[in-house]
Image (cartoon, rainbow, N blue to C red):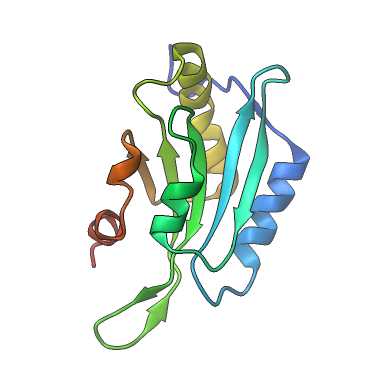
Length: 140
C-alpha cells in the first residue's frame, strides 16, 4: 500500500476548521483534534481546545483510538521571544483496531498537506506526549 493512498476524505467543514485554527490570533497553546468517521470514511473535527497545557491535551485524547492533532504551541524562547509553532501530531496507540490504524495512516499525508503543516510527529504511547517531548521535537 502506498503512503499516498487517501482512504478518508477531508470534509469542507474540516478544511474550514483548519484554516480558522491556523489564522486565529493565539495567546496560548491550543489544539484542533480530528478523528476518522469510519462509516462515512471522512475526517471530522473531534474537538477544539483553547488555553491548554500539553498535559491537558494528553488527558483529552482517548487511550485506545488514533487521533490527528494540530497543535499551536506557545513557546517561550531563551531570549524572551514568544512564538507559536504549528505541529501536526499523529497519535496512533499500538492497541487500537488494525483497520482503524490503516484508515488513519492512509489519510495522514493528505490531511497534513491540506493543513499545510511541515512539522509532523508521530506518537504511539499517550504518556510519551509531554512538554519535554514536544520541546525536544521543536529543537528548544
